[in-house]
Image (cartoon, rainbow, N blue to C red; front, side):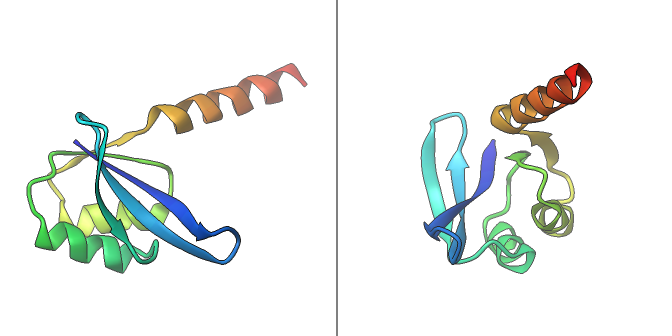
Length: 93
């Protein structure tokens, strides 16, 4: 299972992508940006991801569909909880 998320090299200026082995909780690679092209190139060069855990970024989804079409995409827990929290807050207001 591969985790994909963005991170800041320099907040509000430069962002990259971190790839994590979710089962081992260890970083696999850091990509220099967060574009779909960069992630697709990485996935093409490193085939075999069966499950990709990601946030709702459409660029990441596009890259996974292009370079790892057989992989199952799942939302990560943090984003699921964030979305649930926002929905509950909206409902309560």
